[in-house]
Image 1 (tube, rainbow, N blue to C red):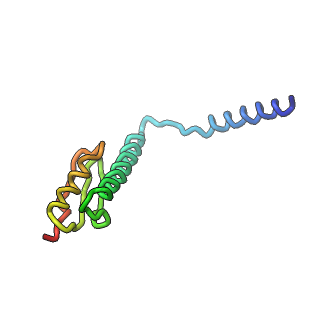
Image 2: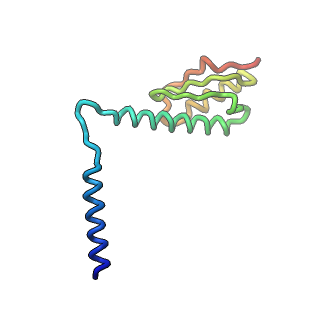
Image 3: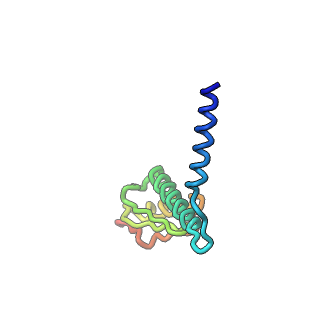
Length: 109
């Protein structure tokens, strides 16, 4: 029985500490939406890079991907205009992408 009592006491103590350590919410400053958008943008960037990596003819290492508020910006130089179109299509296929800015993505031909 002493072990059970010790386990209960430790559990209660940890719960009390968790309650004390819980962040206080403030109505004057709420950054949760910003944090959620940053995570979402990072996720989109990762997914776009992954799509580019599996797109035939597109050298993903030649393309820089940046996402802000769901808008993906592609920059770099690819071999052909067809490769540029493939890269844009790959980026647009990712869930959560609002728009693709490929004005900085050029072709060698």
